[in-house]
Amino acid sequence: MAKTLTDDLRRIVLKRTRGKGFLTTAILRGPIPSSIGEALGVDETDATGGGIVSPLTEIEGMRQYHAEQSITSSDGLYVIVYAPIKTAYFRDAAGQSIVVNYTAEVRPPEE
Image (cartoon, rainbow, N blue to C red; front, side, top):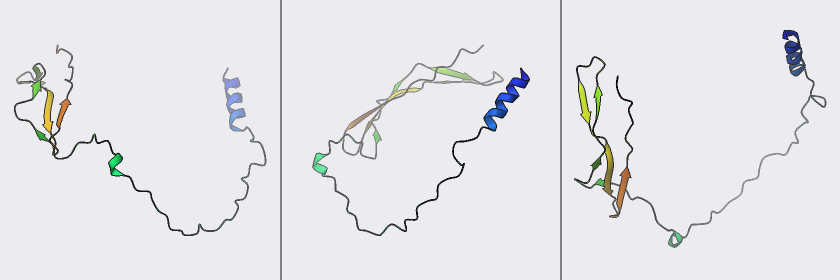
């Protein structure tokens, strides 16, 4: 089996390519001449909005939270209890409401 494997590998590595094995010579073309171009403008009346205008300001007292989770230190002396943010509400500079939803990290139960 080892002999056939090495023979197969040798055939792949030493396989000759078609043709002479050389690239054709490049055609000399010279530099591209300079020119002046013009870009077409965008008509702003065609815009359909949909963007957020900075800065964002959080609406006070509107946060929602996921269920409480806890983290225990490796030595077991400290336990930190916290509630991750579920939803935060913002208002942009144009007065539009923005809602940001966060997912809670799922932690496996500690043993």
